Image (tube, rainbow, N blue to C red; front, side):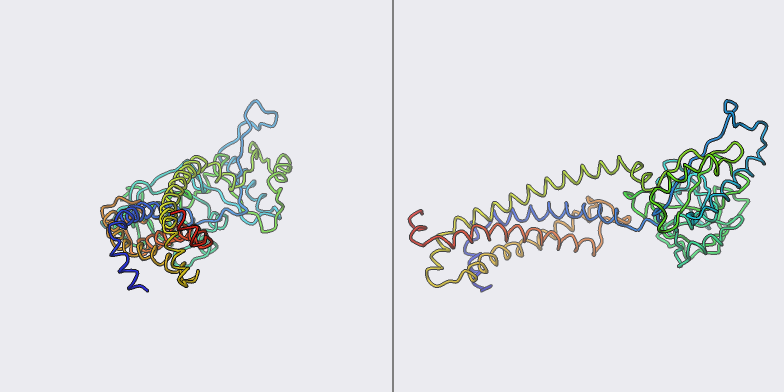
Length: 415
């Protein structure tokens, strides 16, 4: 059967030439679309490096002279003590699992501090996010160590002038894994007079759901508790099974239980809401891109489907004649579909060569600092092949099924 098909394709090479060119163009264009979707999907589904389930951000206010509850002449020490008391009260809440304080550190935060890290001749880029936190920050957002450390173990390690960093800190420049540098001393922020030991390496912490993990670098250090006041970020994790109205219930108790000195709690927001609001613009852009890609895919699908539909419809007399000489429907379907798929198989190696050169020329989207990898390339090639094969099979099946119901005399009369 295959030998006969190859002979037939060769004999019909002139009529098949334009079809092969069309398949080649569709294969290359569709591969590029599939490759871009691969990068988008892979980025969105990468591990975040943190968990915001059952977490909330608490915003605090400070009474001024206009308020009846204002306590005048408070010192910084008293303010710090009031803040610690507020944190302790939250920790004693039966539904609360952990409470942390931090500066520009929680996920989906548009306000960031940056810092440089250096060891020997290696230096990080200038976009490393510096997160200053209390130890319970790891328990609130469930950070994981690159060497298997649990959030509790990471919290126990964050003491004094030490720091932790994501394992990809030097990946972009030097392609090294920071987990091999644990317990070595680094220069932070360009201060060559002090050295800070790296006590643990963190799994990569992503900046947003649309930012690749390899491009999100983090350094975490201890927040001095003497800096605690109403301006710090207060984040909490509630226990599994807590009331879905926890935020509203907490605000109901706020005026009595969570007002200490001049500090009061005025807003509780879930991190799911913060995530949605922070990424709204990026999400809208991504949706528009996907709609555009979807529209292009539909056009490619309909174009290729129509080509094979028309081609099969033109051969209805041939189909009817072959069935009149004893050919079964199953054999006819197999022959027609094998012919279409064989055309695709013939053109695929040339399409792969063009696709490889496009990737090699770095005309695709970057993924993990590369424009090409064997796994990515073949996943996209096989996906493209499967999509085009589906279009071909549908374009042949419907008109062939209809042609097989027509009587031979009627078909010949129409022709």
